[in-house]
Image 1 (cartoon, rainbow, N blue to C red):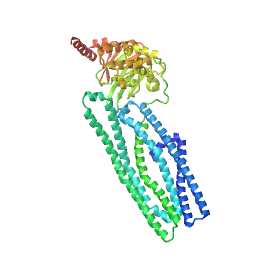
Image 2: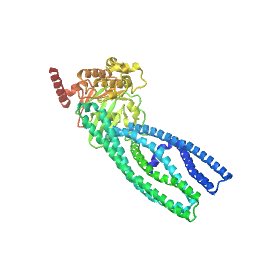
Image 3: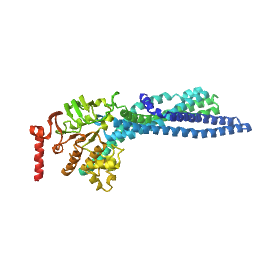
Length: 583
């Protein structure tokens, strides 16, 4: 019931459609209850003998039946269409709402989630709300009203026979409760397995190049087959319970019919029932047991819907770990100074990543972060954008604590260029202008020139209208990086973060990216993460990170002269470059 009440809050936006649909459902039920009575009345007239007056009454009853059947068409249309309309609008809203919630959740939420499973919640599990609101709830209302209405009619015909008719109902209700408790975990497991299957498919289709390169097609097909049949087996467990429950309900209902026929025949033999009443009872009997028999299907569908609803609501009810404070103010007129004051950070596992990190970067300067893989360099830059919150200490932009300003205004002033550059499946112009939709084509071209990608674009078949493919598949690694740099330049954010912007490119492309970086140096505050020290040798300040701490600070020349960690890294890379030159 708590889950149903929670779901009803989501559906309240379409209450007018639901009210009309429910009223139409009640009208349809009324027609269904009236029609057998009219038929039994006609039977009674025939039984008593047919004269001209009787024929007129039969004719009026026939016209009444025609009118009732026409009303049935109108009520059924209103009931079905409006319930479906409201339900599908609700599904659309929930898909958007679930996606929006996922977009706004902190990055830590996604650490143990599969993209395919989250997609399954947005697309597949939300679809179950249509089943609930367009089918289950209307049918449940219809069945309840029909059952109560028929019971009242049967009691007025013969209360003894009516009570005999009700004898199997407690057993059916008890079995329904047991079935509900048993079957929902299997439906939930089935939908979880469907999410895992979607996750596997998403991974494999994204990594199809690696699958081909490693010759793992047969292996991955087998893995998909395993996930596929895990979902099927989970569904079959639920369907096995249904296969037992459905015929059991039908059998118990049939026993009720046998009791009515036997006891009704006995009453008729002793003169306690007329032919008209017997006909009426038989006609209403099918209406009486239909809702009870339909309960089996409704319970199965409801458990499936509830299992999907629980998965969707798990997303909608996920807490926002990082959000604006009530008194948060927009960050305005940012110059780009960045200060870390005794910052600590640890992920959910509690293992420290950053320890007592402190530094200050002046506006328009270039700050470089170097150090071994996994020491917290990327995490440090993500803290600046508040993708995560420090566990201790403060981070300031232009002297303002970033936890005191709105996230939207903070992130509008920061443009990241990641090592794993993501491009959308659109044109080059669309990707460069993505963060600045108001920019003109001239602005886009100027940004491309500043990023040293303009000439490459002009050599492409459709120039700036060239489609890049999924994740920029049609571009080289260096071209993707420079498109991302152009996007950052176009946005005109005072702070630019470069996370390994030259890690996976050749020497010539590295030079082009370095020129692009040099072109914006002095105009923006640049935070650059680099393993290649040649990329950041002109940085105003270099922080050497080791074991989550700032081990060394200084310019390139100062750190080389110190003879510490940085000097050893420089010596190793210089020797490697010399060997490559000799080779």
